[in-house]
Length: 56
Image (cartoon, rainbow, N blue to C red; front, side):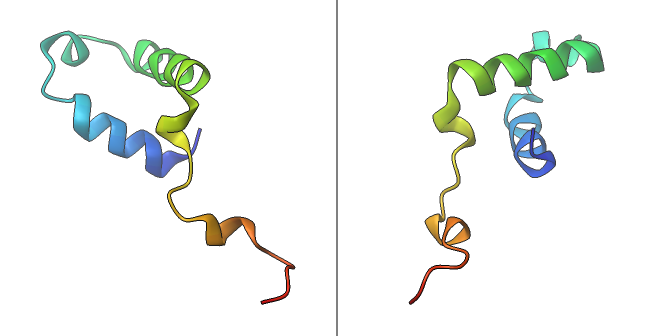
């Protein structure tokens, strides 16, 4: 999982009382599950990053 995306999710979820009681292992497991079930949450918003080597 991309560390930057994990930080964004962490900042969104930090106000949740359930999330606050979770261990780091549980948070990591949650992020992996979200990444698997909801890949659009982790999609790059900028497609330019995938254009390496292509002519402009």
